[in-house]
Amino acid sequence: MDGEMDKLWQRLIQHWRSENVNVPPGADVETIARFEAEQGVRLPEDLRGYFRAADGTGDSMDGSLYRFWPLKELWRSADYLRNWISDVGPNVRRLVFCDYCIDCWAYVVEVRPDAREAGPVYCLRDDPLGELMAATFREFISKYLADPDSVI
Image (cartoon, rainbow, N blue to C red; front, side, top):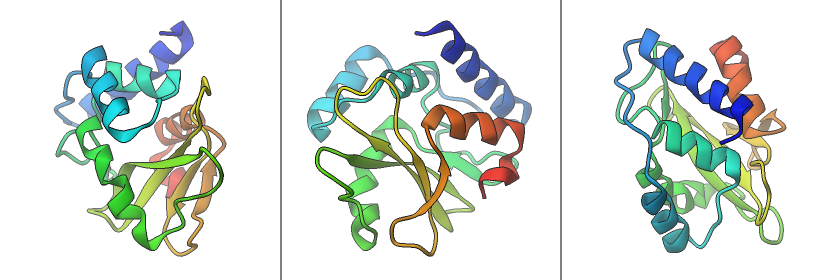
Protein backbone atom coordinates (compact mmCIF):
# COMPACT_ATOMS: atom_id res chain seq x y z
CA MET A 1 0.00 0.00 0.00
CA ASP A 2 1.07 3.53 -0.71
CA GLY A 3 2.37 5.08 2.53
CA GLU A 4 0.22 8.20 2.29
CA MET A 5 -2.92 6.18 1.61
CA ASP A 6 -2.01 3.76 4.38
CA LYS A 7 -1.97 6.72 6.80
CA LEU A 8 -5.38 7.85 5.55
CA TRP A 9 -6.90 4.43 6.22
CA GLN A 10 -5.33 4.37 9.69
CA ARG A 11 -6.81 7.82 10.43
CA LEU A 12 -10.18 6.52 9.27
CA ILE A 13 -9.96 3.48 11.53
CA GLN A 14 -8.94 5.70 14.47
CA HIS A 15 -11.89 7.98 13.75
CA TRP A 16 -14.33 5.08 13.78
CA ARG A 17 -12.85 3.63 16.97
CA SER A 18 -13.12 7.05 18.64
CA GLU A 19 -16.84 6.83 17.88
CA ASN A 20 -17.07 3.36 19.44
CA VAL A 21 -17.41 1.56 16.13
CA ASN A 22 -16.16 -2.02 16.33
CA VAL A 23 -14.10 -1.89 13.14
CA PRO A 24 -13.98 -5.26 11.36
CA PRO A 25 -10.57 -6.48 10.25
CA GLY A 26 -9.62 -5.83 6.66
CA ALA A 27 -10.47 -8.26 3.88
CA ASP A 28 -7.68 -10.57 2.77
CA VAL A 29 -6.30 -10.61 -0.77
CA GLU A 30 -8.23 -13.80 -1.63
CA THR A 31 -11.57 -12.30 -0.53
CA ILE A 32 -10.94 -9.20 -2.63
CA ALA A 33 -9.96 -11.33 -5.65
CA ARG A 34 -13.10 -13.46 -5.22
CA PHE A 35 -15.27 -10.32 -5.07
CA GLU A 36 -13.63 -8.96 -8.22
CA ALA A 37 -14.13 -12.24 -10.08
CA GLU A 38 -17.77 -12.61 -9.01
CA GLN A 39 -18.60 -8.99 -9.85
CA GLY A 40 -16.51 -8.72 -13.01
CA VAL A 41 -14.72 -5.64 -11.72
CA ARG A 42 -11.14 -4.73 -10.84
CA LEU A 43 -10.93 -2.52 -7.77
CA PRO A 44 -8.43 0.34 -8.06
CA GLU A 45 -5.47 0.24 -5.68
CA ASP A 46 -6.94 2.82 -3.31
CA LEU A 47 -10.14 0.79 -2.81
CA ARG A 48 -8.12 -2.40 -2.43
CA GLY A 49 -5.98 -0.68 0.21
CA TYR A 50 -9.07 0.60 2.01
CA PHE A 51 -10.68 -2.85 2.13
CA ARG A 52 -7.40 -4.47 3.21
CA ALA A 53 -7.13 -1.95 6.08
CA ALA A 54 -10.77 -2.12 7.24
CA ASP A 55 -13.78 -3.88 5.86
CA GLY A 56 -16.10 -0.92 6.33
CA THR A 57 -17.95 -0.46 9.62
CA GLY A 58 -19.79 -3.77 9.44
CA ASP A 59 -23.32 -3.40 10.79
CA SER A 60 -22.43 -0.31 12.82
CA MET A 61 -23.07 3.34 12.10
CA ASP A 62 -20.67 6.00 13.28
CA GLY A 63 -21.76 8.88 15.51
CA SER A 64 -22.80 10.88 12.43
CA LEU A 65 -25.04 8.02 11.19
CA TYR A 66 -22.83 6.84 8.32
CA ARG A 67 -22.40 3.12 7.71
CA PHE A 68 -19.57 2.06 5.45
CA TRP A 69 -20.46 -1.22 3.76
CA PRO A 70 -18.24 -4.27 4.08
CA LEU A 71 -16.96 -5.77 0.85
CA LYS A 72 -19.45 -8.64 1.04
CA GLU A 73 -22.32 -6.13 0.73
CA LEU A 74 -21.04 -4.31 -2.34
CA TRP A 75 -22.78 -6.95 -4.47
CA ARG A 76 -25.99 -5.09 -3.56
CA SER A 77 -24.90 -2.17 -5.72
CA ALA A 78 -26.69 -3.32 -8.89
CA ASP A 79 -29.96 -3.89 -7.03
CA TYR A 80 -29.62 -0.67 -5.09
CA LEU A 81 -28.95 1.34 -8.24
CA ARG A 82 -31.93 0.06 -10.27
CA ASN A 83 -33.77 3.33 -9.70
CA TRP A 84 -30.70 5.41 -10.46
CA ILE A 85 -28.54 5.78 -13.52
CA SER A 86 -25.78 3.27 -12.91
CA ASP A 87 -24.47 2.94 -16.47
CA VAL A 88 -22.58 6.20 -16.77
CA GLY A 89 -20.24 5.24 -19.58
CA PRO A 90 -18.36 2.41 -21.19
CA ASN A 91 -16.50 0.27 -18.68
CA VAL A 92 -17.53 2.48 -15.74
CA ARG A 93 -19.08 0.78 -12.76
CA ARG A 94 -20.69 2.43 -9.76
CA LEU A 95 -20.42 0.70 -6.41
CA VAL A 96 -22.41 1.68 -3.34
CA PHE A 97 -19.94 1.79 -0.46
CA CYS A 98 -21.73 3.81 2.22
CA ASP A 99 -25.16 4.91 3.34
CA TYR A 100 -26.38 7.64 5.63
CA CYS A 101 -29.04 7.35 8.33
CA ILE A 102 -30.20 3.80 7.55
CA ASP A 103 -30.42 4.18 3.77
CA CYS A 104 -31.80 7.73 3.66
CA TRP A 105 -29.31 8.08 0.85
CA ALA A 106 -26.29 6.27 -0.46
CA TYR A 107 -22.80 7.08 -1.68
CA VAL A 108 -21.39 5.53 -4.84
CA VAL A 109 -17.89 5.49 -6.22
CA GLU A 110 -17.06 5.11 -9.89
CA VAL A 111 -14.66 2.32 -10.74
CA ARG A 112 -12.87 2.24 -14.07
CA PRO A 113 -10.73 -0.60 -15.38
CA ASP A 114 -7.01 -0.23 -14.85
CA ALA A 115 -7.38 2.98 -12.82
CA ARG A 116 -5.02 3.37 -9.87
CA GLU A 117 -7.52 5.52 -8.00
CA ALA A 118 -11.27 5.16 -7.70
CA GLY A 119 -13.18 7.87 -9.50
CA PRO A 120 -15.70 10.40 -8.33
CA VAL A 121 -18.02 9.85 -5.37
CA TYR A 122 -21.68 10.80 -5.71
CA CYS A 123 -24.47 11.05 -3.18
CA LEU A 124 -27.71 9.51 -4.41
CA ARG A 125 -30.46 11.66 -3.03
CA ASP A 126 -32.64 13.56 -5.51
CA ASP A 127 -30.69 13.73 -8.76
CA PRO A 128 -30.75 10.44 -10.72
CA LEU A 129 -27.09 10.95 -11.63
CA GLY A 130 -26.20 11.78 -8.05
CA GLU A 131 -24.67 14.86 -6.50
CA LEU A 132 -20.89 15.05 -6.86
CA MET A 133 -19.31 14.93 -3.40
CA ALA A 134 -15.63 14.40 -4.24
CA ALA A 135 -13.42 13.91 -7.28
CA THR A 136 -11.95 10.69 -5.83
CA PHE A 137 -12.65 8.15 -3.10
CA ARG A 138 -9.58 9.35 -1.24
CA GLU A 139 -10.82 12.96 -1.35
CA PHE A 140 -14.22 11.83 -0.05
CA ILE A 141 -12.62 10.04 2.91
CA SER A 142 -10.45 13.10 3.65
CA LYS A 143 -13.50 15.39 3.60
CA TYR A 144 -15.46 12.95 5.78
CA LEU A 145 -12.63 12.83 8.33
CA ALA A 146 -12.31 16.63 8.40
CA ASP A 147 -16.05 17.10 8.89
CA PRO A 148 -18.63 14.33 8.32
CA ASP A 149 -21.31 17.00 7.73
CA SER A 150 -19.35 18.27 4.72
CA VAL A 151 -20.40 15.23 2.68
CA ILE A 152 -24.09 15.26 3.59
